[in-house]
Length: 117
Length: 116
Image 1 (cartoon, one colour):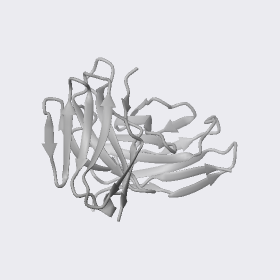
Image 2 (spheres, chains in turn cyan, purple):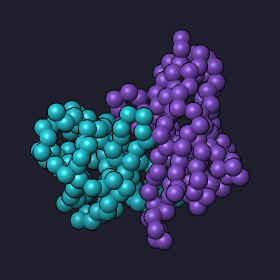
Image 3 (spheres, chains in turn yellow, green):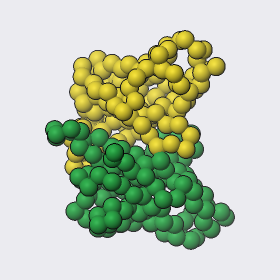
C-alpha cells in the first residue's frame, strides 16, 4: 500500500540536542511538507519541498532544517536553536505544489511526537 | 493577515444526530478548500474538498457548503456515529506570492464528540 511513514513515533530529547525525524513516502509525490501541531492549535507549516534538492521555509522555520536528496525522503532536524520543540510533527506529501482541486490535497503520515526533557 | 478559523472549538452531539462544523476564512483569492479529520494520535485524513466556484459538494454522509459572500465554510455530517469523533480541520488553498505555487493553511480545528 502506498503511504507516508514517519519515524520514530515517539522521541525524547534533552535540551541542547539536535534530533532528526524521518519521513518516507512511496506515493511518487513531488511535493513534501513538514507541519507542527500544538495542543489546541492548527497545523503550522515548517518547511516544504516542491522538488528534489529544493526546499522553502514555511511560516515557522526558525530552529529547523530539512534536506531533500531523494524524492521519497524529507527528513526534518529539530535543532537546539528551536526554543520550544515539544510538539506533534506531521509530514505530508502531495502530487505537486500547484493549486487547483486535487493537486494540493495532502496525504499525511501518522506523526512523530517529540518531547524535550 | 490571512487566516482560517473556526467558530466553535468543541461540538458534542448524540449518536444519530446531524453535525455541523463551521469555518471562517479571510483570503478571497483561495481557489479551493479541504476538510480533514484527525483522530487522536494520528495524522489528518482527507474527507472532502470544494472548489471556490461551487456552493455545495456531497460525499458519503458528508456535505460541504461554501458561502463566498461571507467567507464561510461548513461541514455537515449526517447521522453522526461514534467513529466520527475526532478533530476536524478546514484548510484553505492559498497562492504563494505572485507565482503559481500554493500552500494549504489550516484552521485551529473543532473537536467533535459523539455521545452514544
